[in-house]
Image (cartoon, rainbow, N blue to C red; front, side):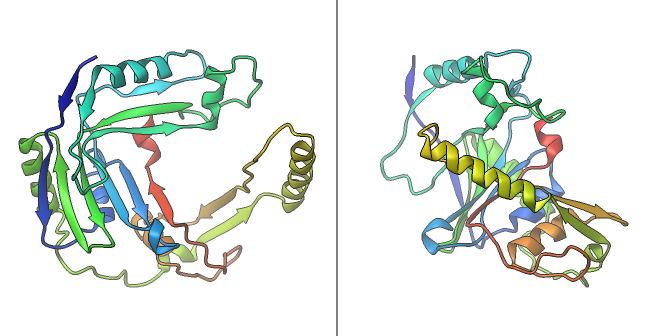
Length: 261
């Protein structure tokens, strides 16, 4: 094990950049957006757009082999950092880590779990030596990187994405008009609620997370940047199967699926 003082490069920005636009402009460099989109003020402080190290091979856990947790533990043990006590930002470089429920099969090998989603790992870790961070409480933003040279690349990317320009609203919600939404059979969900009550009363579990899948079919190309903005701003739209209740989470993430493959 080796421990060393973290050396991080920080550049304050004069105004908060548009993280979604930067991700759209450079999806290969910035695949992971963690956004404080709504909810109580205490929960919506930071938004982070992580920049990956393209030369570092990701660590993935697949259903047919293990070793993910061991590899991650080994990296952590070999790269202990001593962080400054007064560092004001929540990120100094590291990894973006995705842990799916399916990771349990690598810990409890006797579990009979459903087959994983095609081309989706049970878990994954991607090296991220830099990030663009917005502090919504202090109305401030910065670039953070492990190397000064990387800061310069990030500044160039910000400039190319024209993130300091005033944001312009889309002309219309036309890209949503052709979107038809459907949801799983509610009776299936009700039966699942009844079952978990039995599990809880029996002492088998303490908590169960349930969800209902929503599916969308569009008759025209989708503008995913606009759709993300629409959800984050509590917009409504009309049409078959349209949701009308506002339900913006305090914490949200936007991770293009191609980034995890």
